[in-house]
Image (cartoon, rainbow, N blue to C red; front, side, top):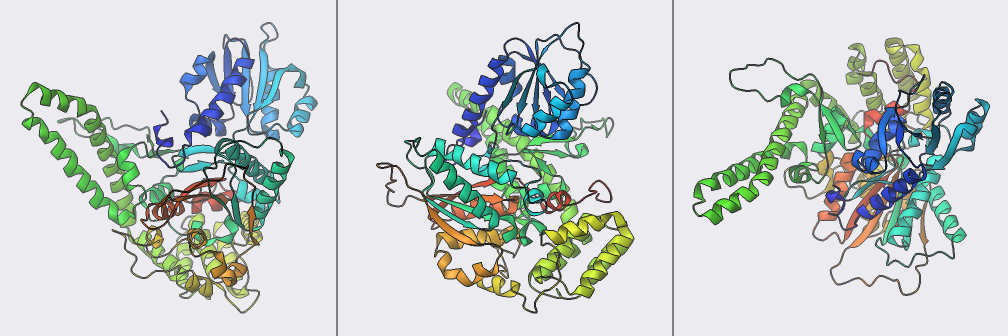
Length: 599
């Protein structure tokens, strides 16, 4: 069920239903029994749109992962490939088709996600298998609903493509996704943006709107404003360690398509007298979204406030179970029994999150975590950012994970508006000598996207930006926050601060700071069809869609939710992004040999 998609101000289930309808129509084109061969990367995103039961209703009998050689045998009429438009995948498909048993031929179909590609079709033609396909189609899956206020394209390398390879395909998909949203939820009257990629997306959207001028949707606009934000306007935030519950789960274990895999030993059900024998070896896989009441309550809290919240919940659940002793009449007993499934689910949820919190606490209370966090916070407040950090030197000497080193060096560079040449050269030399010269390409990539650079001018703008936008708040209240800075225990994410200022008092109040940040800032208006102008009721909040181009972290999402829930905010936020990221996955996407030295 997708009940968590109804719970926000905007019903994102409409988008999910539209995607399911398109999928059903395609499956019905391939009449008869089917086996789906999946590009493995797509299974997660598709799981958020349609479960196996929906596929089964449309005669899908088997599912396989795309790999070289022959497709496993299956007594089906159709073989359907669900793939991204990647040339290397076409080579595998060609191998699959060529090794098919000629005595029992089956119909082949390809569904490209999210777009068809002439280059891919050309490759299939070169391999001599293009004519083997009955259907070649595309399935436009741009924005996938992850939660009641969250959409993601899950385009795994969009930041790398845009800033390193100058490939703007993901921006085109973002613009198409926004057009789909407007077709379902009405025209968005106001567009604001900051950054080069934001400008490109806005231009493409406006052009597409002109091209479809005659086909305006007669829908009352749900969104008042669209804010397009480039990731490179705020390079600092993803580098910092997230300190919300959900952010830390992602930092430590990684959340993929709404699921996390955790060490199994914490979740083993020990029966009395059995001791610790036969502990499970498979990771514990848990789904994380707001459909789970407790998770919705604690996900965006600073981790230091989670323990108290869990203990309070435990008392509430315990008291609810105690109620059974007070149930005397048949009616009371019946009422208690009817509540039992919900209470048992709440108890199981509490047990899971208590175990996760214990796992995280083991890490956050370690000396290593504390030292690293202290250095991060020193950089963010401008302490010793212009010289070689002894902490980073020690980490390199101990051969700590390379990604940890790169995150810290990049953070120092961003907070200092570049490093002195001798400092940067020293870091590079230490990294290459310790971790191998193969990483020279990675360092080049980090320089190209602006995460590492030499100081070009003597002026460092970061302190001005920090003071003007109040990016550092001393004594951030972690238990009962009154500012977004609680998500990083003091640091307010620049991206979210820009969003907050846009709503009130407006960007004109920070013109000077906006000029210091990367890329242009702009405002556009879209004509809303006559009679569809929104009449706001007294006290009704505005709805803003914030689209992060290049990725967003869970801590930024938590900060935007905090703004939505503030009593006097006047604005509710829906978040969209090209990809959900954390510092590790983000740096990894920019590496050229990311498999080694990372653990």
